Image (cartoon, rainbow, N blue to C red; front, side, top):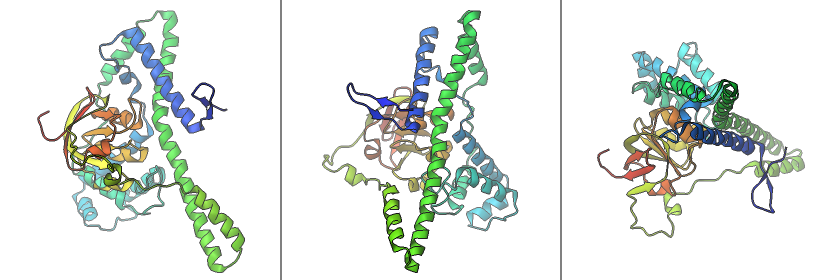
Length: 360
C-alpha cells in the first residue's frame, strides 16, 4: 500500500513503519475528540486513563528488570558479588533470568532494542540492576484500577443500549492504537538489531576475504554496499549546538507541552547518546531529544521526563504516564539549555520546566 503526504500538489511515499505509527496516533486522537465531545470532562486528557495499562512491551521489559533487581535486594551475597565485579554462577536462577532477558530484549549496551552486538557483555544490564536494587521497587500502578473501571462504566452508560456495543468497540480500538503506538517502536528496534548483527557478520567475512587475497572484486562490491548501510551519526556537542548563540544566556524557565501530570524536582541528566544512560541515577530528571524505546529501561529510576520533541503521544510521554511521572515535551533546545547536574523542577500540569533551585 502506498501512503502519500501532505502538501497540495505534492506527494511523497510514507514508509510502512511511519504509516503504522501515524495511524495509531490518529486513532488515539480521534477517540480523544469523541470522548471529550461525549463526556465534556474538566481534564481534556482524562481519556488517556482509559487507554493505559495495556501491557505494553516496554513495560513488560521493565517488569522483568524489576524482578531481577528484587532478587538482588533479597540476596545480600549476590549484591556484594555483583558490586565487586564477581562472576555470576552460570547455573544460578539469577543468571538464567539474565540470559532470558538478554535473549528477549538485548544486553542494554546498544542503542536499539534487542541489540547484543555492542559490548557483548552483561555489565550494562548488571549496573542498571544494581542501581534499581538500591531503591524501593517502582510500579506502573499509579492509577486506581477502580477509577479506570468507573470511568469506563460512566463513559459507556452515556449511550443507549443500541449504541453501547459500537462505542465499546471504539474504546477497544483506541486502546489497541495506544499500545501499538508504543510497541511498534520495540518491534522495529528488534528488526534493526538483526540488521546491525548481519552487517557486522558481513564485514567480518569481507575482512577474511581481503586477508586471504581472494575474490577482491567481490569484496570491494560488498564493502561499498556495507558502507551505504552505515547511516550512523555522532551527536553534536553542546558547544557545536550553541555555536553562534550569545554566551551569556542562562535558561530559567522553559515552556513546552504538558504531557504527563505531576510536579517533581531532581538533578538533570542530559542524554545525548546511548552511553550517557550508564550514569543515570535514581531521582534524576531525564532530559533528551526524545526517549528512544531502548532508553525506557531507566525510566523507573527517573523523577520526571523532559523532551525536546513531541507531544502527548510521543513514546517518552506514554511511558512517563505509565509510571506516573511528570513529563514535558516540545521544548526547543532542551538538551542545550539544560545541563547535566543542574537542579530542575518539572511541572507536567502546565508544561513548564524551571532551571535552578526553588521550592515545588
